[in-house]
Length: 148
Image 1 (cartoon, rainbow, N blue to C red):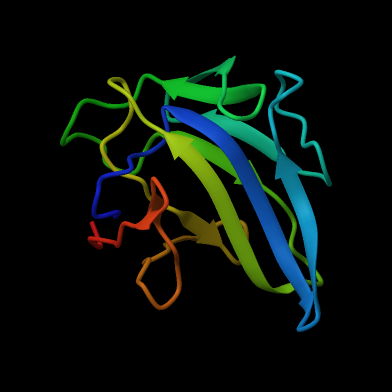
Image 2 (image 1 turned 45 degrees about the vertical axis):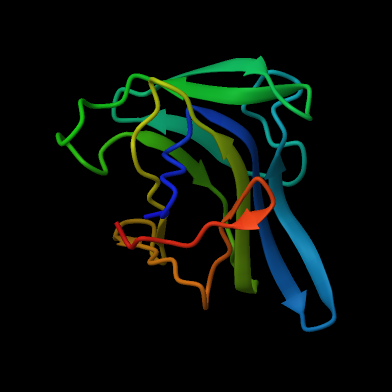
């Protein structure tokens, strides 16, 4: 989806799920920083897991202490959208939800990033990122989207 091919994370440095409680304040619903080298949120409640055969481990991050590293994605052009990481967080009682993360890629990473969400816990929707509803920054510069 992202023009400069910031791919499905090999190294998830930081996953942050936030909700805006009102027009005047922002509330962090759940946050993971992985510094304790586990998948327990550092703020709030939720679960993080790998799906589709992806394997996770912890690696030294930058600038944080640790990051969640994932590997073992399907071969290129096969099983698109079937493997990666999944963060489950209840957003009941919140609206205007924002999601943010930092990722770094290297050789064993998937070649694309796809954000999916569900409104009912069963049916998954693909988020289509555009300049109007998302921000993609690479090395401090806007990187755009390719709708892939």
